Image (cartoon, rainbow, N blue to C red; front, side):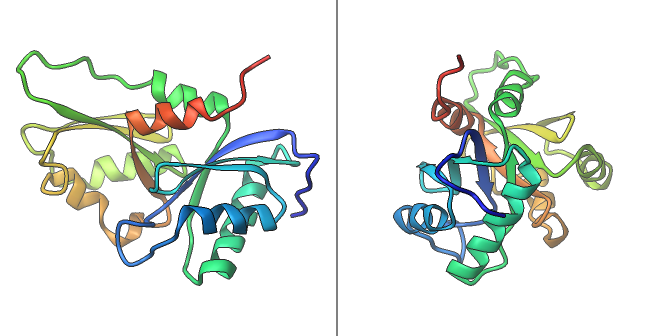
Length: 189
């Protein structure tokens, strides 16, 4: 895909599995690689694989293909990304279905972003059951998930989502992170 400085379409790109395991990428190196590939106004959000960039194409599939190829060439790993536009990021935030529980327990609010509603359906059908303190709900191509702070990695759903078959199909973000990503989009006119 050819991306030039005439880029006029903004996307959020969510990278799967960087800076949490064996794959370490400095955000300045990530920005440089994507800029060198022709994307414009490349910005990272936190150090967990959230990028907002501009592309000449309006096709998120073309952006995904180009970003994955760039990451594979620049950093030598089997990269998977999910690409969303402003409206889709806002819809993920607005779609969060859970109201705060009135039990004094602090919780993380997550959006498990997937490649499609069929993935969410499969994750819920195959799930061995939620821990008593977890909540999960389907929302199109997003699985909304809530779990008490401090128990994310030990929860039943977390263990289920860590299965290798979901690696190329999902990435999880805290809703606070999604708000920060949305704030990086240019103002709507």
